[in-house]
Image 1: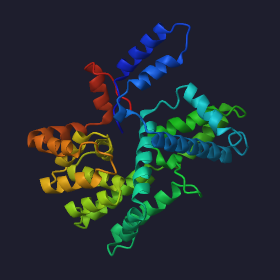
Image 2 (image 1 turned 180 degrees about the vertical axis):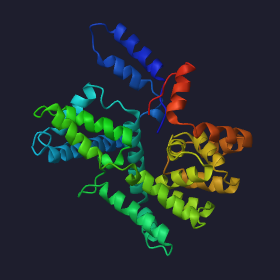
Image 3 (image 1 turned 30 degrees about the vertical axis):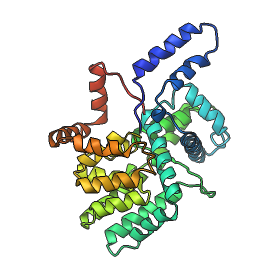
Image 4 (image 1 turned 60 degrees about the horizontal axis):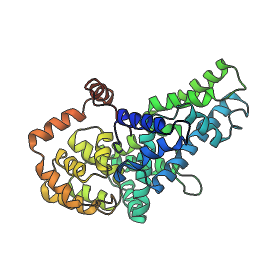
Length: 337
């Protein structure tokens, strides 16, 4: 996840652009917002393509599951592209958690693809581990990742990948787009589908379970972190650093993948890594994270005092909804994923 401009600032820029082009080209407002974003906050073409593909797979999966429960072809016959546009136009896809999931999975796929066979070999090694807990947890991750791709190896997404809030909102949104059944039947089909949803089976939860097994086996040390970084296992690395720092996994992922060298340095300080280990991790992640100035990461690491690290850990442990509400009340505006 990366933080962009505050919503209030974006809203003002759009209003100013619309006022400037009254009766003219409405695209100027959008172009103005996009053009003025920092380069590090803008989606790359690869990220955009992956996120678009995964969103289409997710919407298609939900509509197909609903069709099975409706006993008709009404939902299955919906054109996915048209359905996405309807949902987008109604604002039903403007959900930070959904965008954060798409962005996270795009980052994971990009990193694993860059690592190639090296990353796959590490996970297979874990799956063959002599420790039953490590082997079982690793095999669950292997299966989850395999199910996250279609038969052509392309990145996919299903309702099971979503958190509970997103799953509920998205399922009801797709159900509402089906016009040929009564509302009671549509809601019943959605409830039946959601009854099978289990957040514990999400890839992120399974990765956290593997990291926990490694920690309980006494193998979550600096060498293990360096191996994860070198093999492109950014998902497991984020969970490992979160586990050591005792902060939420999403917070660790955000700091790791923010394209901000300072954020990476602070994350390693939160995880109380020795300076030599932190420098090794930064060097190992330089290419995969496209760090423009790796030295800035170690400077941020050095600059963070123990008291600052303790305060930051305490803040990150607060519920996200509470943090967002506090920022809004303080007039800081909301940020979008």
